[in-house]
Image 1 (cartoon, each protein chain N blue to C red):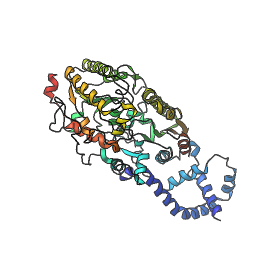
Image 2: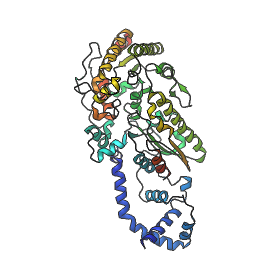
Image 3: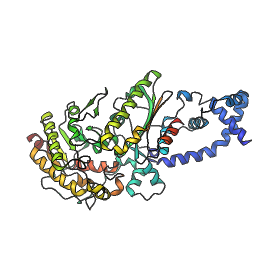
Image 4: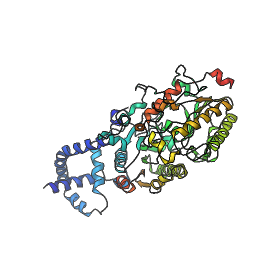
Length: 152
Length: 342
């Protein structure tokens, strides 16, 4: 009976709020970012960025094209560890948002390749995916776990 | 800051799990009724779903829909927040919440990350673990935050933290992680909004500051011998002076590292070495007519080390110590008349 109830609940959920999951519309940006922070095996303290502090790290990201975001970066600035979940305002804005996140990843490579080469494996195994209208990035010690968290 | 923001992430997740357990059965019953009303087709459709359309995703997402978590900073506001408040989460914060033996500073970060918040009391500046250098900028009457409206901070990863923590949002920061006194002259690392890369000096040319604070060294002392370090630093100061001849230049001392870091890696980061390089920086400031700020005094303990519980990697500092650093800067300024004279 319990299994049947759970199955019915799952069915209901799938056909109501998550119908657009493949499109990313039902992703809770903050929640998935926090779950990834919890799962990624991070060695650093991560700091959540705000409208004021985000542009310094994501220099080419146009906030006018962003509906919402949760971005956590290294609190010590001594590692490239990072989680970003950014929802584009529209489908048309998605390529630019993705390009800005890719540019951020390039910058992390630029910053750490000579400075702390031992951190480069985290960048080289970074997870960058798109789910619907969201772009998700994790630069994590445990890339597989971070990927699983980002993919839900 | 919303207290929920400063709450360690581990607590949040645990709380949500409990909530989920308590609320699941009423939801199940409601769902059963809903399915019955909708017809039997949905159950059949579920069985036809291809593998990989993860039930975990769906349950997780829908749970959030039922119990939305407030996201005050998630949606960009029309006007930027003037005093950003850092939210510290992650491994150390979770460890602290779990009763880890991490030092109190880590606990402070986790439980009072509003350490950068304007309503938090300013931490007292410790000392005198780092001795005074005759000629360093002496203590002065505190200035307000608007003193930094036309200030520009140049440096490496430590300086980038001013932006990450929003320590002084009105100040301009031109800094890059990994830069050192040598690469700062040549390596294009500052990306503009159009995506182009510039050297630090090129990027500085876009600004018109009256005060320029330079801090470099944490990345340089390990790889650059003293003469190369000072030679490159000297070129940088010359370049800044040529670019901004009327600006007051402050050369800031290199922060000490933790005792553990000081003794590691054959002493390439040792505090003895840092003290030696800082003495050279003071001499450089005299040669260049710049002001020398002994900011190491703001972060050192009574032994002259960075306290080990405030620096996860032994070099970098957290938000509490950014506040400490800026309290020092506010109380160690040179007068505009002096600045003009130089």
